[in-house]
Amino acid sequence: MKKKLLFLILCLGFLRIHAVAQNYEAQTFIFDEPYNVNTIVAPTNGKIKNVILMIGDGMSLMHMYTAWTANRGKLWLENAPVTGLSKTYAANRLITDSGAGGTAIACGQKTNYHMVGTDVNGNAIPSLTDIAKAKQLSTGVVVTCRLTDATPADFCCHNPDRDKSYEIAADYAACGVDFIFGGGAKYFRNRPDKRDIFNEMRKQGYQTPESSKELMKITSGKVFAAIDSLDLPVPKERGDILAEASLKAIDLLSGNENGFFLMIEGSQIDDYGHFNDIDLLMQEVMDFDKTVGRVFEWAAQDGETLVVVTADHETGGLTLIDGDLQTGEVKVKFSTNGHSGVMVPVYAFGPGAAEFTGIYENSDIFHKIKKLLNL
Image 1 (cartoon, one colour):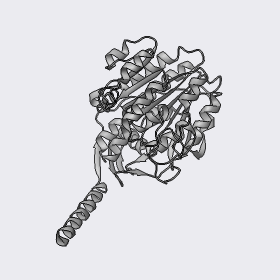
Image 2 (tube, helix red, strand yellow):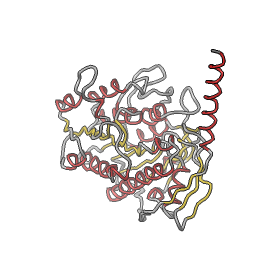
Image 3 (cartoon, one colour):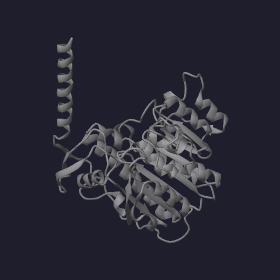
Image 4 (cartoon, helix red, strand yellow):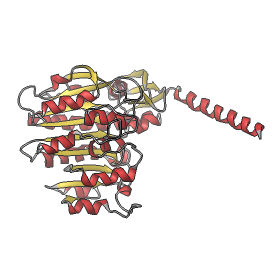
C-alpha cells in the first residue's frame, strides 16, 4: 500500500512539474486579419449624463500591447486620452479573482476572494446599478459569459460564493436592471427548485429574446437575454455580437432623460489566459477592442458620456518576448494558469476622464463614477 501511495505521489509530482513547465514554452501567433483604427477626439467638457464601464476580464497592459503589436501597431483603445493604474488585491488575498475584483469596482468595497456583491461578512452591498436605479437612471449589463459568472453577478446579485450558480441566477429576478445580456440559460429554467426565472422576468415586463436576431428586433422596453446555454462561443463563431448587443443596450437605455449606467464585459479574455492559448486570447482582446471603438464613436457623438475601460485582474502572467509590427507576429510566454498580482490599466474617454489619472484602489473606480454621476 505504501509503495502504491509513493508511486501516486511521484506521478502527481511529475504531472505538476510538466504542467508548470508548459507555461514557460514560447508561443507564436500571427494575426492575419488586421483591422483599421480611426482617430476619435474625446469630448472633454460638459455635463456627464451617462457612464459606460467596460471591463476586460483578466486583461493587463501586456494583453493590450500584445494585441497592439499583432494588429500592426494600432488599437481603438489608444483613443483614450487618460490612463491610470488600479490595485486589484482582495480583502483577504493578494491575488484576487473576478468575484472580489469585480465587487470592488461594482460596489466600492474590497471583499473576500470568491464573494460577489457582498462585504467580507457576506452581507449584500449596493452596486452601481442599484444606486443608479434608485436615482432614476437606466441600467444595463452586457457580457459574453454566462450571467451567473462573477463579473455580471457583481453588478446584479449578492452571494458569498460565486459558485452558487442557481442562487445567483435567482437574484436576477429582483435586480431591476433594465437591459441584461449574456449566456447561462441553463441556470434560469429547468432548475432544481422548479422556478422558471425567464417566466418571472416576463411577468415583470421584461422581453426575453433567446437569440441575437430576436434581440435586434426589440425597439423599446426592458430586456433579459440569455441567448446561450452557457458562455457565448468564441469570436470567430459568435461574430461581433458583443459590439452589437452593447450598441442595442445604449440605444434602449439612452431614451431615459436622466441618463444611464452600462457595464460591458469582454468576459472570455480571462478564460484563454487561464488556458494559456494565445490565439483565442488575442481573438477575445481584439473583439473587446473593436467594441471599445464602437462605444468611443458613440460617446464622441453624444458628448455627455464618460467611458471607463479597465480590468478586474490579470490572468496568465502574459509576457511579450518578441514580435514584428510589420507582419503582426508576436512571441509570448505565460507564467501561470491562474491570476497574477499586477496592477491593471484604467483608460478614460469623455467628460470627467481626468478623474482617472494616477494610482488608486480598484474600489475607487466605484467612488469616482458615483461622484461624476452625482449618485
